[in-house]
Image (cartoon, rainbow, N blue to C red; front, side, top):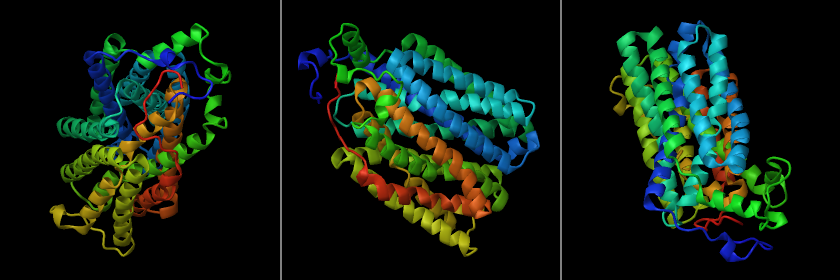
Length: 438
């Protein structure tokens, strides 16, 4: 809706986009999220083989994950501001190209130090994708079924993880453990570069962003609705600071949920449970599939109820799954064997995967909360601050606190507990109409 003191309603009216433009925006939102998930899983899935090749331990690679997550905060802040200032299209393109190049170079890195540098660069590039994808989506998509479609976009994140599992497993089977993970990096990086190149030519710019910048240049935007003179400053002003901080908390909690699985599940299966790589890959793929299904389902639920209730209900599933896993680990009953489908631990893990469905709501929830002039920055800042804390700092802290990979994995229960506690505190503007000037 229009804020008080804004221009008259006709100044904010933007012509409906053609169907072709909507389809292109959706395609690139899907692809950007898919390869973001693929990139993030490039450390967690082949962790054991990277450690052997680079002659480092699990702790050093968890540090890579931590630092990559922190680098994504920098990328999120920078790319979010650039997306609001210079446009969604070119910022998206630059972000994709950066982490595509970083993946290729990571696969060629001869030692740990250079590998770490490539992951830091990748983190900066990945920091641009979330806010940009959902800003473009919200600014092109009507209010009907926005949550369900947003959940489908976010589900591509785990589809990307399935891509990583499939490609790295294939390369490992073909070239061996030492070269297989490197081949996976190069293949995924090259595919990402193709997506970035296509975006430069085919991705439409946001119609609401174009209209806002045109009105701003013409001097028709009221002072209180103009961009802050200090980049990102408006996110922490009175009107938006509460929402920004609460979204950071919620995003951190969701990343605690998912990244406990990403960082530790494969190592738990291969090194602790002594499961063969092929069987472990099947289990990891199943968790990704379960999560990919729960994202759009939770998004659809949020259209029927609202964003808050859907996230709360999803978090209860996560509490049940991780709680069950924690009991099995602490009682020494955790077991996954060749016939994994008969093991309690396997089903607890599946429930953990299902409990992260709230992520399918987060992108749309943020996009509806922030106005057009700071939508990209607000979404990116909240999301990537959450990634840095939940996906970066927490896995390392969990390993230090738990003392073992098994307990660190089960400590993912902290995520859904926090989601359940904070879900109803976050501002909710379910299904609102997006305007250029608001």
